[in-house]
Length: 405
Image (cartoon, rainbow, N blue to C red; front, side, top):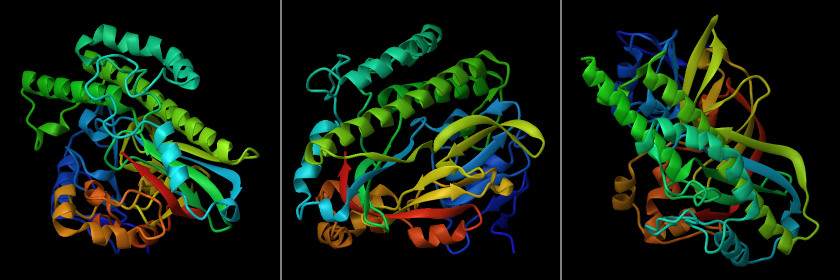
């Protein structure tokens, strides 16, 4: 028996790895909308963490010939995960982890960090650290090139946001694996500058659709045909933002490891390190064609590829190795996936519920993080079971510290 189920559609087929996990009707309709577009290659692949998103579902893989849909990539371009295994062991940790959490919060700006400020220092109380300045120096020419062609896409704090966490479901965690080794794991993307690029090009694509009288089932499926000025500009911008997102995670990881070295001077990192996008587009070859693969809330899982599938706060997370399943376009899920909206989670759960669900994790336990409580997400074990033919589990992690914006 194959690992996927078919979803009926009047367009290209939809193959969904959703056995044993819920698929909301609004997400199903979005998938059918995308499958009906004329430039889809072969089929749409759906991951078990699938849920409604802007334009296209989160947890979907969209292969296209000759066009890219900016809203399918999203506005958190290059959002993804990074994890590093350290030489610190469970028995080395103090009984209280509050001091470590506090130190990480001080070292990695998080939440709404710039307070409306217009200077490029942005979130940093002093100057951004040297690693952030060096990485921005390597990125700045590419940014200038994008903005020279699209001045309204400019953002004032490219350097100031580099190495910062942001809000929502972004996090920094300390985790222990099954052998008691401590990992640093974090989740973030291209921050304000990537958001500005994404928003700008989504609107530009919509304008182009209106200009050419293209009717779509959802205006957020507006696309750029290959060869047009919009396509060329978008590919340049999205490629740059994906590089920025990788660098952003690298700066944060350097900051967190610096905190740990203050507490554990002998700290070393192992060869086990992963830095992967889960909101991005790339050129790949599938089923005999060179195509653009948009993964919206999905991780590449080619044969031997290492990836990260986080659970929610208080749930297990996984380091995985891809099986190279071509039917999924060599992809796996990017997490547990939301089971309900943020507003619904805040209506349904209390602070006491959240405290109970995050017992044993040093993290925020207040009303402002109720929308990120574990009960707002799908069952990570069911999600993993549904994609057993996509990845194998290399390490199972449990959080002991979680920092959220």
